[in-house]
Length: 161
Image 1: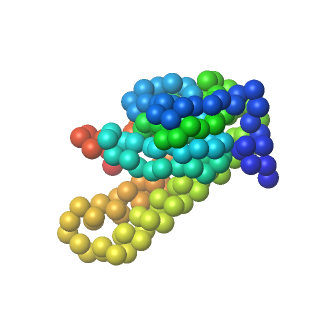
Image 2: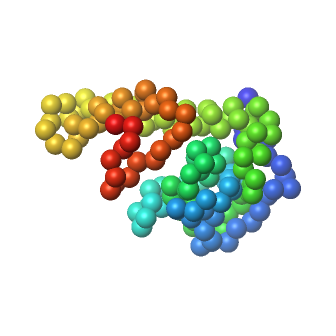
């Protein structure tokens, strides 16, 4: 199987200076970026969620696939090289191999999240605190079959629950 970097269009390669914001949380850009080299940080609000330097890392796909605003801000921590797709939906539809690679990436992320949540559930079984909701979250992840995705909120209850 080809890596995402082997599928990218060389004409889409772009140099980004340190400090530049590629995606802004809460905005809808339709853009997708694939990291070639450098370090990028992912922020939710003012909290740094991750620092990513792995070539082939993809940013912006969730917003495009779910037709929702970006769930995080993505900013270059160092000068970076990326493949930049202004029409991310078009890129994702351009080749079945692209769609498969992105689907595999998302499946890996979901597997990590559910594995972590299952471990939390085992560790805190029977606890009468907020960790008791892990069972509900796991059930929601496993059984989510809605045609439309509705993101949850810290302030609003999850409409799927």
